[in-house]
Image 1 (spheres, protein in one colour):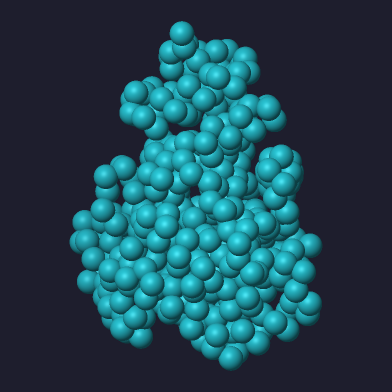
Image 2: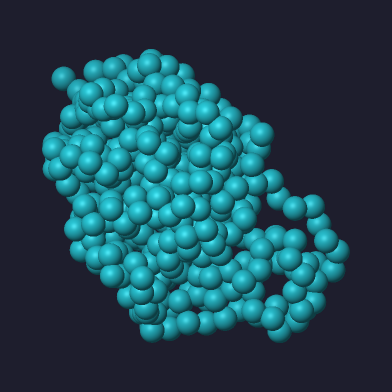
Length: 427
Ligand code: URA
């Protein structure tokens, strides 16, 4: 007979775990037979000691088997998805999902909530009044069939184990672990029943993988696990040494995504959108991918897909046209103290600041503030005069607002000389 404590001790001693032991932990926690405390010890042991390849495959498979696996093989088009390992200001899914659907792909996207210092796609979508992010599987499938895209969270029916473990990792500092990230992402993606997957592995001071070599190790692991399940995978590496786009937060990122879908997106966001989009359309065997993507954006069909999806999920379309749907009660600018060029952005600190403003959870039961976020007026390489605004942060809870200045006041550094710009896309 196993126990969570003895399995955890085995891992703490550096031993590898067997398939039945891993399944015992995953199933036991999902069923409520293993407590949050015991599961936290197990996660911390994995975080510290890691897992070998076989353990990672077994872990992914256990999460996958905790719920249903979808089948979209009857659909007339390519079934594809995109997933990011997480970053600050990373709103790409909100733009690229509808864009791929507008290029005749089918996109059954299971997305995540905030994790660590990063903000989650589902938390952002849920700021759209009445948007339902936990649908029954038949409803999710119907929306994918009819609209080409549905974006929802893992539920009690699909990857319920990730649903629970993800929430616990978020508040126990156990996010940045190769096997835990691999198991969480790949189980969801395999359960979706997709044919192709584009992975956006973020690299930099605001990513869970700070170096390209760590990111590549994660990419290789996910490629190998994908192969076991016959999934075609394109692994991309993009920079997270500064936030992506000009906002980070909840409602403000939905508003920025809508501007991107209208053709008014910032260059950095759109470069990543096109890069990943081209990879997805190549997997689908679609010719002239860049042209196809640009057309779907400029003729409004990607925006139409986004609105159709929001409507199908019960969300308010009127809110999408009204940036003031969520209006923060408190706002503060941070201004430059000297003239010079922006040389460094502490992206981890900026993301952590957004979490503390109410854009993420410090405890599992925390309720999010849709108004929480930041607007960046300057990015790395920009020149700034003393007194000019660098960024503005906002939320609607006075105590949180007052406590957060330390995350924003010193997060941006200025130098007199222009320094090398940071990498956006590692080709
Ligand atoms: N996205 C996920 O779904 N899981 C992770 O662990 C990290 C990013």
